[in-house]
Image (tube, rainbow, N blue to C red):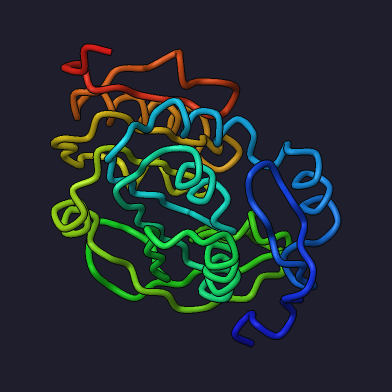
Length: 233
């Protein structure tokens, strides 16, 4: 299934400044309710909006429905946004949503980032937000192969000034040891149920090693922000 067959082009759910085509696969139950009340990914969106400025280049990891990308594209004069997600059919929906809203500065790529270029298993789950690179013993999930792009290569090509990371437990390993030249802000949604206390510590250590410090202006609950220590703001 390519994800297009369930989209209703004549019906929409409005969420803040975005229209979401009605859909029988992804906009179900709780997601519909949170979109209608404006509470979907509220903390992550708030941090992303605070982190971004005009002419930023944004790398959105685990972009999902495209909600965060759509919000900052609408609210900020962003130069370009590059979104990655392991769920290819979900990105088909995200592309339809962005097109519906006239957003044309977002490039979506099916795949994940890691230390080396390869093909890796990705576990697609219901709800879709639980999909990840991590297997869960005894849990039903659709295992698919996805492209892993070398994170250093992507950073060199995209040259982001802001990184938003919501990758369901992959954040500690992916961020470890990477150079973040010219990156001003990083927003990470932590998943301590997957990475534990050691993983949370690893995220903070990786950001410190890359020259970024904890930014309380962006941080609420599991969403934590970091700012380049050279940024005067």
